[in-house]
Image 1 (cartoon, one colour):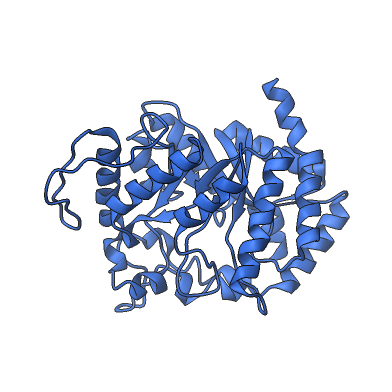
Image 2: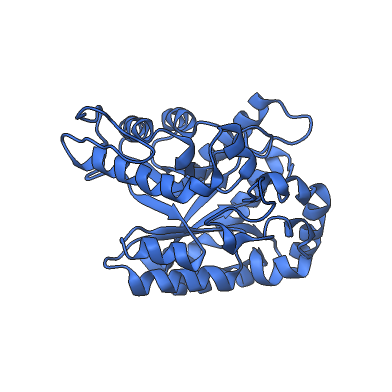
Length: 350
């Protein structure tokens, strides 16, 4: 099992944008120091939920501040971008980082962001699939031309620069719904499973992918992660974290895949009907039993083993991206996990 850290770059009340960037860049450097395999950054637009609109710009900066750790996106929302730009920028970051880029991609889901770009959320899946075709074509063909429903190159073009990794940086597609997992498993594209899905759903997703994929791949699962010295302390801290943050700021109409014309889930997002609107009322017991990797070291190791045995090879750890924890406290959380949990899985590799 590999371990990576997730960085939403959520801006808490009273924080400046620079403070948010400085906070997470310091944690990225710490992740490398502690032996984490990678980091992944989230793209968001138009609100404090996440304040990194261009992941490649920030990853290029992170590449200069690190030397070993993998640098990933989690995720690039392809329908909001020209895929030619994505292929170019990803290739450039791959070069600048010495071949350390991991490209996580997805169709997105936040209606508020799609409205801001004037893009119909119901087109998200078709736009995503066509954009992926363009990116792979540019990465793998010396000369490429595309004319589709949403994107076209016009003339034949060659990608400059080209990625350092051959044939291209590893790809992971954000997926957890059965339909989406099946679609990309059949193409052999590894998935990045959603942190808001239950253990049962992500385990089923991994098993489905493994059964259907024509080739092996490294599956990634994102979870909120917290380990404390005792179960009692972990329970107390869970309650403290919940009291620190209003979850309705994340799970609300702006973050839900709702078609503004109907007030219902947009076309292609039926699986998620009401899911994000219900997020604000998730109970502590539900989070403890079904959603988060949390507890003392023994319990956390057991939960991670469950995910590993289901077929996941990389745990993307969100140590509290929406919790306004002071920097030194967040560092203690990461250090404790690296010391008490990671060695149990690193011994397996040796």
